[in-house]
Image 1 (spheres, rainbow, N blue to C red):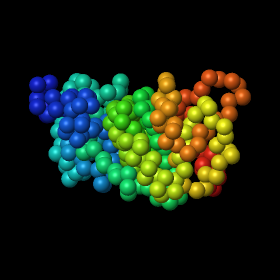
Image 2: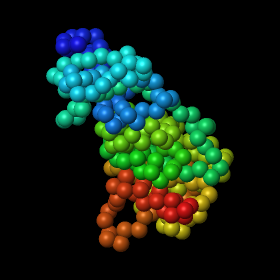
Image 3: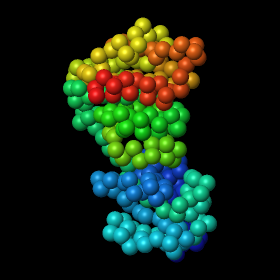
Image 4: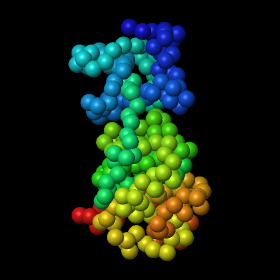
Length: 256
């Protein structure tokens, strides 16, 4: 059992709290029993880490077939976990890779996010996109890191269930979608149409902007049409993840 904070394994896992280290190593952490149980077979688990108290209460023999395993003290596990009440189990995994060309299809349904910075919003958008049956989520350069622990927790495991493209160039994405006949709608306060006026049974994508600034003019110009969500209560705007949910579920309604 590992008890020293100076152990190389402990230092390596702590380093993955920083994006630059996750990017360099190509690794991320899945923390918690439910999250670990959601890891699909096609995601490579590099290491499994257990707290001493978890091992006392649970059988971990099956995990030895999946990856190298280590048991560490409860104190050390708490120092590694990003949660207030750690469950005593985490996995270090290889990052997932999706190719935009492999997820684009004629009647597909997509969410594109331009510089979405709030981890909770992004995680909720991914979870909702999975629930709504979207064919992919595309994140532009400048968006919050997909493998941020708050993002991962907010997805509730949906990060493993839907293709997600990161660090995408919006011009390239939009060109590829338009070539495949997919209409791109900008969620925009200056929109002239409501989502209920659109034909969403055909291939479509909704582009959402930054929480504070909305969509940039550059991104808006890449879209086929600006669309706004009615707000009879005259609120200034909607939360990005709520707006995404409204748009996605109008698509679901039309396609049922």
